[in-house]
Length: 350
Ligand SMILES: [Zn+2]
Image (cartoon, rainbow, N blue to C red):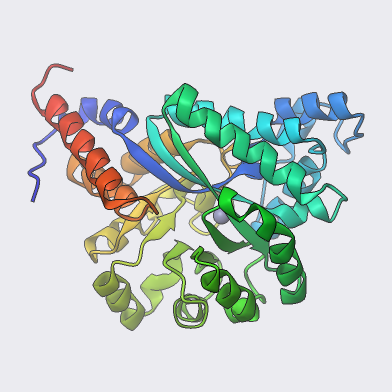
């Protein structure tokens, strides 16, 4: 076991920002900053229901998941051409590189675009080209995960999956997102079984606002490898024990939880409890343009509010690599770099 030396409190934010990490819960449409939304609207001649950047930003006072989703879908309406999808992903990837994200698995919602008449090829090719450029130009490893919108039917998801199959070499898995309550995972049993048969990784949002029962069915019916959010697990002792035993990763998003009033105050967030229970918890940004921060903002603000330590920082970053869908050799390489980073900070030369 790697020994994490004490790090002076004053150096902890710098360590959090500089340590290598993976981001596993980021919706690329949720990285669209108001400035880029307006630039793309102008480029594409799309009329927005907001007068300017300031008016759009002012509308980001959410009361729950649905109030956010309404604005999120309005923002996505400016995306029409392959270059738009590229530009959106590239903007995120540059920020990720600046935050020392060495690997990211990016969610995208094709139905948000195909329902507006944008072809699947436009969406996937634009995003994938940005991911390929991230590796060569930024040194960031980036993969795509196709998410189904759970407020739509499973039939629609099956149709979307068939449309995406010709591009199967450009995404590594499928996920489930959008309005959780009232749309349990088991609604998508068949499409997840099909994706599994095609050799794809499986993840799903569960236990963000929804009950622990949704996490059970994500695990037992959909057979997911990771759960996105999962913070409601603390209400079910048997579920907590299982998550700890199986090391099922939870991709937790603290600033998102705060903005959507799951935990109105970050100091009340249960991430410390989840870590203490031995769960494979990770920190992620979810929809950073809308929730007030990218991954390093999530780390720094959560550590400050919850009083977490350098030991927690190491565990969280290590968990992010353990939870990544990468080869064991790649995982060990990043964990080695993580240890070197922590040793640097322990030597007191910062
Ligand atoms: Zn999410």
